Length: 142
Ligand code: HEC
Image (cartoon, rainbow, N blue to C red; front, side, top):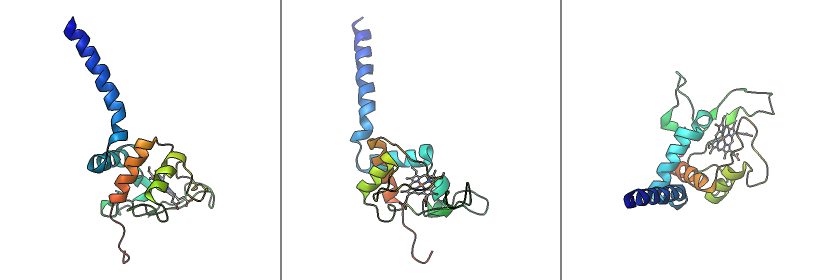
């Protein structure tokens, strides 16, 4: 009986720890979680990574911006997803984290569709930004 109670307590305690964990991640663990979120859940690369001739993602140019063609009315819908690798142009890491939580750029405007207006929680936004900050930027000759 005692061990049953202890087991239940341990589970409750571990569940609480698991929920809190993402907010506490730092360094390599935070980047690793961002890798999982970006490449396994929110899939930023579907639009922001250029494709090879066979339409697979060109992982040598991950998040380096891509033409995505027309997916809606011209002008209303964007046809190019800008480069994000290393951080999007003109964003500090904190501004990028805020953007991922609100969908609003630092200047108060919003990107056009099909860019989704993400509402990530702060822990996930921090992980996504930390991971994208590690990706190599395109060299000027590319
Ligand atoms: C369905 C396609 C799609 C997906 C998925 C997508 N984006 Fe975008 N994103 C775009 C397009 C297209 C634009 C350009 C919008 C414009 O020009 O108005 C854009 C714009 C942005 C911008 C704005 C840059 C600026 O100029 O201010 C940021 C930042 C961004 N995306 C980050 C991300 C991140 C991070 C993810 C994943 C969490 C993501 N995007 C997923 C298509 C996408």
